[in-house]
Length: 102
Image (cartoon, rainbow, N blue to C red; front, side, top):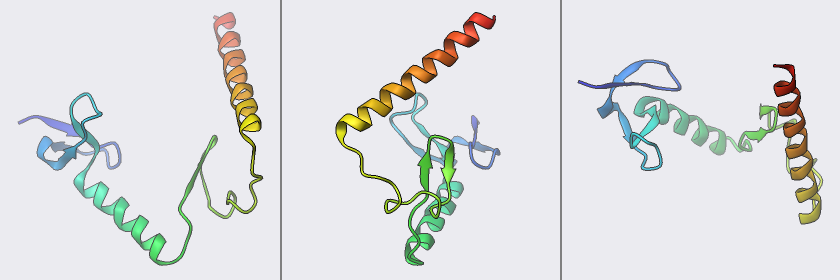
């Protein structure tokens, strides 16, 4: 029987414990059904309690109190594009420095 490791809990489980995800190379979700159920329940509980969803920032997952729609300035398309290009150039500069150091 083939097994797969869940990304969330880290346990090896039979393939029947994973849901279908056509976008993945093996055709199976990377979370087991138990972990998906827990994540779904946590999301439902947050929504039911009236808490806003978690927000993903460039640094990782942030507490919603730190990053909310109210305290974030609304950017125009040109400003968003300029920030995207700045991030891309920063990433490229880091890559060049890494390659140069080797």
